[in-house]
Amino acid sequence: MRTGKEPAIYNKTMTLATTEYSQAIGSGIVKLSAKCRGFYPVQLAFKTGTSGTAYITIPAGGMWGEDNVDKIPSTIYFQCPTAAQVLEILAWEA
Image (cartoon, rainbow, N blue to C red; front, side, top):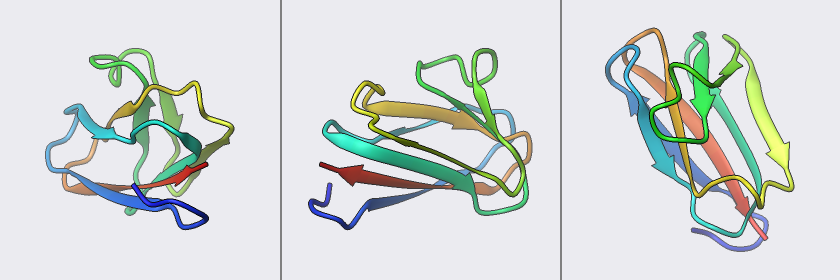
């Protein structure tokens, strides 16, 4: 994880459609954002096994972001209904 003002960048390929993937983001994160590189929705969750049932939707072409995320778990979970998409994640440390 990087320190200072430069965020850590994660590009996570979702090879298969409707399959849950995860990304560890570590602790000490104060800001987090995510978007699909392609024009497709992504389902984002904070507990394993829930990206298909209890999730928030990042709409096609949209971005999700939160400040003051010290209470978010150290791993996020996500899936896309379209195969071969990339989730771009930015994570800023304190």
